[in-house]
Length: 130
Image 1 (tube, rainbow, N blue to C red):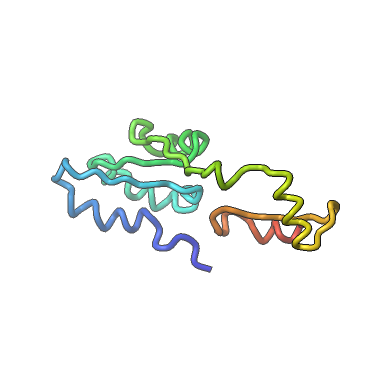
Image 2 (spheres, rainbow, N blue to C red):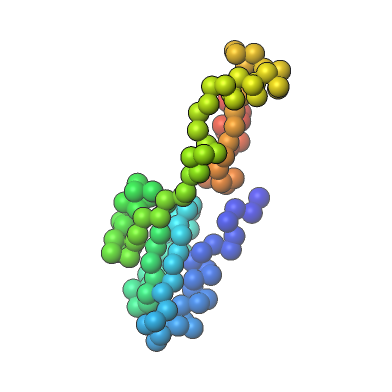
């Protein structure tokens, strides 16, 4: 399984030296939950990041607080994933219609996952307990 390769620190380390003296260039890095999986590589980049314009965009306040332990909090801005509330909302009528179409009773379990497929999400564990 390839899980988010090449990882962002490697890509960023290739570009930062090219723009080291150009303060007009800002790198925007949208961080996913797998930041912790490549923490050692982020730490190796720390001095280069401090000398460059890099802005980290975590998707949640919780993630922002976590990465602020390793990255200057002034270098982070919250950038939540957009959710189209016209597409994702609870609708009991549609729920019942889809369950009927699938031949499911009210007692049958139905699981729908809308998210990043990643080892970190432990989807295999989730499926094994369903």
